[in-house]
Image (cartoon, rainbow, N blue to C red; front, side, top):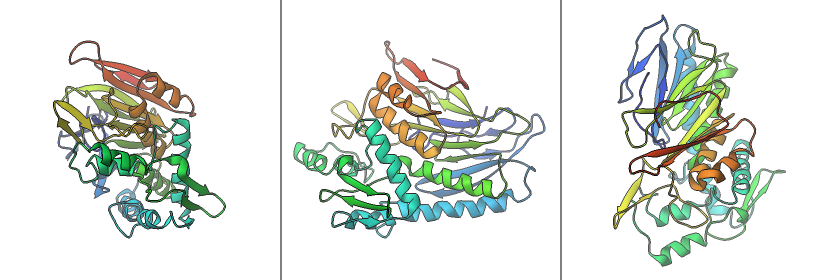
Length: 352
């Protein structure tokens, strides 16, 4: 089984198979067991490493095509990043309180998906929650306890119901001042979906693509297998040990957890995934993984499931066709876990 270092929001995702291996640092090692190799091409973007894996020798133009496709991620980052003042989303955030702002159709569809999930989760998922991230210091990657006044001010700027989308002209308008949209929770997944479409247009139909290891998308199958690609989930308390394996075929996997950003205040740990309804960091879940038809949907639902937890997360996933989830939560004993799962047939639990 191959191993990748933790990344993004994942509590630990790894790409794995019987015929290749990766070192714990994520550096590739080409290893032959049954006559099958992997070729991979990667690039750093969106504050993480994107990598695409192919069956070696299957496509003559795989590497050149992958390099062209990875250029698409650079374009999407310049559109989606709230850290770039001239990005399309930053310009929208500056102007949408003054009136409707037309956006690129793909971006509009991403906003529409986000609003659908906000409604389905009763606000547990909300891309207007950026002010909360500022208040808690996570936007600066320097978490801190906000004062009650700062938190109240941030909460007054949050609320998906105050965003008006007009499908007729792909426009967005904020119905209260000083709001902002932030698609960090599904931007990597959206980038994977866009890149996958480009690869398939070029006749490449067997590949595994990941963004920061917390977002994965698989098409076709690995080598001479017919069931897809095996992807592993690491144990949230014992990082060197695998917890579960998923087999993905024409599907995506997103995992949310607080391994990436957290801080301790007066003996309590606060993570960067925030509950937009309370304004507080979500708690009670070690990790939430979602299998879905698209990577954007998998990523967004993983965030929502992490916030909701338990049966509420499972009920949310039941609303969407082809979606399953796995939640890892604290067990009844100290340093133990409990696993809750729904709707994932190709899942093997290795250690509970």
